[in-house]
Image 1 (tube, helix red, strand yellow):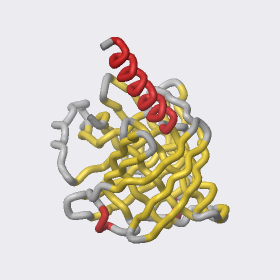
Image 2 (cartoon, helix red, strand yellow; image 1 turned 30 degrees about the horizontal axis):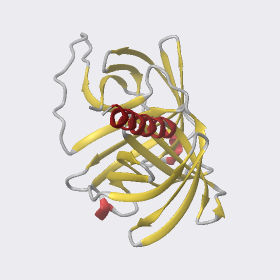
Image 3 (cartoon, one colour; image 1 turned 30 degrees about the vertical axis):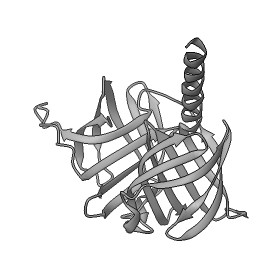
Length: 242
């Protein structure tokens, strides 16, 4: 019994170690043996959720995807909530082979009937107060009244932060409708959250903009106040994904 308990504990620790190694931001360096150049492909893993973005060096958007992930030994299981290249695989579980260490991982598999091999390198694994996967919850009005938290359903806006990178996406996984995504780098400084936009699927002209917001985290809630990329005032509440 003691040996069985120790073996079970070792398996749990090994799985947690692999999961922890995948947390953070990663950059695609080789795609089917070809070195990646002229574009950036960045993936963020946090709280069993992931997103990736693919865009040219000048910020022009190419594609994106995201959803739930699970590591099981040498396998990476993904369930997409959105995937711009092929919406037919949304909510259809995908399984890939992965070789992972702290600094890089190699992934093999097939997607949309196309085989691929990719190598990714760690950008950063920094954790801070906002490192998590967040779902838009509600807004706060001018008088400080917090609206009712939006019921979780197929239509969602998710924002993921990790390794100094952020990405948001709006989608409906039931209808497989993709509404938009954007992202880049971010910093926290004395209650100020500042993001630098590196890509924006709806409007490339926003690339290069820097936006600052007041932020406060209270438990599983993120209060986010400032102005949108259009200059409109906003005061939002985001909730950590369960």
